[in-house]
Image (cartoon, rainbow, N blue to C red; front, side):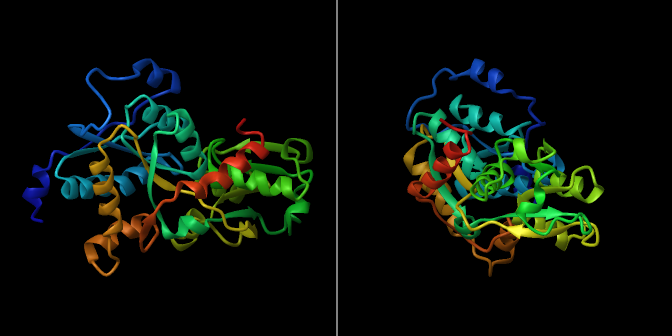
Length: 300
């Protein structure tokens, strides 16, 4: 598509929204929005699991692609925290969100089961978290974390908190009781930098973000290394607001499913999401995430 045609698309990237859960709920339901709707603007968002500049770099092209495929306006709407994506979908301020496994469970619960999981990357069907530490720290396995300082990512992160905590508990480790200190970095890349700099002794993060940091040489492997990797679990998923027209939801899903790594334009998008293809989501697959959240005391 020529540049002038792309400029003609009514796509905008909104400034970072300083949204809190309370503010979103206060906005509640906009007048005239009903079930089966096709909004004039599709508002896309994502959990802020990396720094804001990186999120813009990743999701602006996805908004542009969907605008072309759907023939409608699409806005990428950044938010300040994980809770804002959940409340944004419930308050009908957001239409399509890239959630982690735990936040997708929260969103489905918060919307009384109406939010619909559409597609996930093939890697998300068997996702993992990595535990990292500095060489020379004496940390060779999970048992060595006793008495050490440790960083999770965001409290609401599946791969940066929920599942690492779940597997620690399965290995008989209670972070708040057994570690010297537990901190939350807020994002996967921040966790890696905290460990590398010595701010904490060890931490856990998303394996794909770790791989990207290594490939981009943003971490020094002489100063931070992986010492344990979790078993696989299901994680990230594109989730739509349930009130959207069913046909529109299917068109959104199809737009992701048709991405072909052999197509250079498609490859750019797939590389941004560190995958080669998307697959359809099956709601039942996230039951294990919900059960893990209950077991870890993060859900009732």
